[in-house]
Image 1 (cartoon, rainbow, N blue to C red):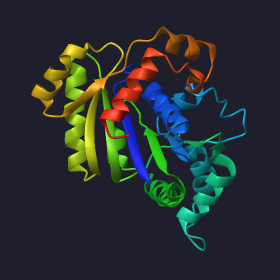
Image 2 (image 1 turned 90 degrees about the vertical axis):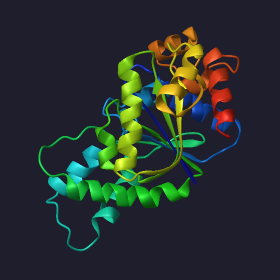
Image 3 (image 1 turned 135 degrees about the vertical axis):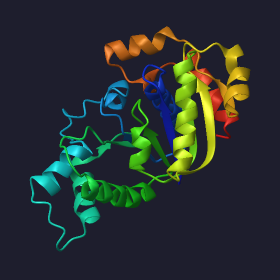
Image 4 (image 1 turned 30 degrees about the vertical axis):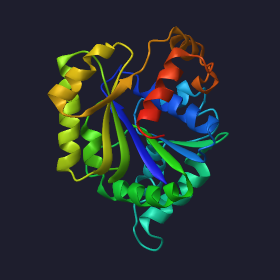
Length: 253
């Protein structure tokens, strides 16, 4: 089982990147896949053409509130991770063709979230073992790194746009991942749709991180997202999809 994390500032295309990775893995028979939407905006389901709520599914945050807060939060009897794990299987897991999806959702309450967080980590640790690939779509900020939903990652893909803020964001993400002891094999930088390819050398010079290509601009992506069509249905000759295949090949996939 390999864990892949897509991250970056808002608007760099990280969620579309996850959808196109999923398309590539399905087409190359690298299944089953678990997608974890860790972004409170829950946009991964949208780009995959999934009506998560309409399918009767709940976010992990909703299940945590339901199980530990509204339900009394007792730790007696069944261990917390097992209590939430059964709820995830029953109410939080969307089952697609070649992939499953869970959405973490926003934090609904103030105060200490220690018990639910630990329960979530424990449950995810068990659930992810059933999949060949786990792909995490993260929020735009960096606070999610401190939550350490998973502390062991194979490949991190950080999407960058042509701005000082984005360069700084990548540098901070790499530093924080090290500081909170997230173990990873590779930390790759990927250019978003607006990123000029000739700036790849600048990424490696300034950040000392490996730049493995950019996602090509593609009007099909916007058309599919606006119409609610799944990016899994995008044509094989789509410039964005072709570029993602090349990026993944350079990463060894």
